Length: 160
Image (tube, rainbow, N blue to C red; front, side):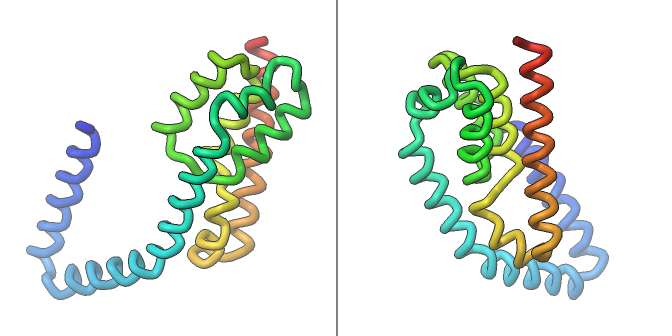
């Protein structure tokens, strides 16, 4: 909460400085960013709807039944797939990970799930392709999956 207030205050100060330096450029930049936001808004609303539906279907109890201690490598694959479906913010992912661990999920499976939820976004892929290009979007998502799997391997070796 406090960090959000600080960031908004800094942004407002910089916007004020920009407005004082050159009113015309600041107005053009604000109009341009508003148009960009309007273009992205339908995709964002669809993503938020999909995330809400996914989180209501995939309850922590259901997920932990799939990625429990005995699931092994198959559980890691399931976690990677489930985590890659939606891009979820960290303030949701960390409590979810804790809940999964408390419900019997294994540490490497939860590690890859949390990592892919925050770094891979198959739901956001179309918007990412429009914004950054197809090649970059695929490269970023594949890299994120590989890094998440390496992270799970390290957690599995070091913590279990």
